[in-house]
Length: 459
Image 1 (cartoon, helix red, strand yellow):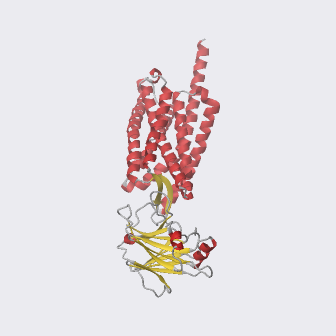
Image 2 (cartoon, helix red, strand yellow):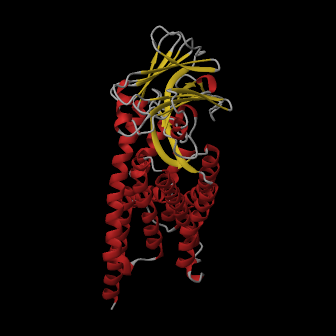
């Protein structure tokens, strides 16, 4: 496609030329310097040609480039219109396929977009075999093609499909099974909840970090320092998630890869600090931290270096790219993430599964200790102790990241409800952890005051 302009220079006096490059066929036509007109190109089995009257022509495929596009191309130093048909273009998803396993590429030597009079690609005598048709486009960027519905509308009749697109790029018609993806209403609701929750989480986590570094840093114990590291991981995760789609929509592949790697790193770092929270809990129950040399330095190296090793490996393998989240009406949203679904499941679900097993085990052990402690101490449960224990259990549940299980381990009919539970709990997790941090600090302050008062009374 990038070499079409040089081919035009070699056409000399010819106004149009048919191209055959391997199994790719195409047609280049020079644009008239004045009074541009609509261009109609017909395609049949193994042949491509110019049409003078597209309405009367009977062809399998018809490409119509409006006068507006030709006029814009001339104003932007474009001198030609090229249409190429790429056969044997197969979709990676075995449940979906491109119509006729082919892709159209259209080039005019200039950037053309936001047309009011659309470029039309019409397929006639189409057998959809019960599948849903959707016109898709790809901007040619990225290692893995991301086919989106941006700028294209799909118009169907009983035996024809017409794509009406407002820009130049690569085009294909995707045939998919009847819609089974997330519904548009659910997608919009989850996006809205997540945006609000992540925004609140960023705010309250930032307040907690402000309180820690300017007010309480000198008084912080090991548990608080670990919690602050978790806050740093979570605030960067929330920020990268909130800006991810905007970066993806810029169309800059390098920026998208950087954003995908950053979000993946902060995700794995968050998981790692959940694990370290549980590990610190275990070591405290075993009364071991004080016996470990350079304990906090070793903890920090584990928390921040381990996820970096995974991310650097995936960067070297080129696994970060654009992905598309498709709703049941055929619309899609771009994200920068791991393009290989198998790698995503193997790395992220496998990583979290290890964290989940250990954190859940420590959660059960700790809850058991909390519940049986009043009895072993010979005390009785009152309203305050029940309230305190409930707060401690809820805080521990969020602190160890057990809520992430709703996203990773839910399938079938419970999938969408689990998405809502996960989104509400996890998007507001920063807010809940700020409350936990504040109350925990308050409790420790009250305990220190009680100790000082008791000492004064004894003296």
